[in-house]
Image 1: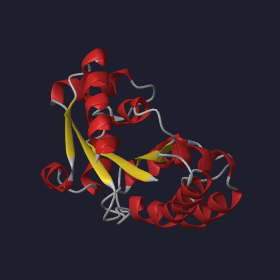
Image 2: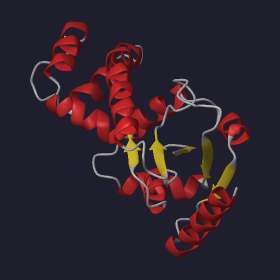
Image 3: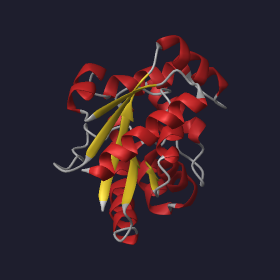
Length: 191
């Protein structure tokens, strides 16, 4: 099984592009949302660490946002609780899909959390700031200040770009992006 990791700046189009590959996708952001909705153990741990912000189950993402906005150090407290659960879910996803030709990992902190394996194929999604800002404004309940703080947790884009095997320039033109994905797929599977 080939592991394809899609990395880039928040709002650069990683999730859309990950789906275009046509393989099972592990989307860490969706997993976190699911954990907030259904995992009572995580709720109890977060309630202990952040009692001013977490007080009902399922966890309201707005409360997480407030905890981070009011104290950026809370990001680390939250990550310490959430990341191990996401990692377990990723392992389960990989086991479930081990017979597939490939899987796609859409994980914002892919390098930062040392999830990269030597044989992974990493694709960096590059996009101009104006396209990213337009995309973020279209997102429901998007909090630009919070996204900026989360972006600060990530390695520099230059380092991510350097560590990547392929780069897709995303101008948010669907036909153009599909063509680029198909070219990369053909290159990956012809090796």
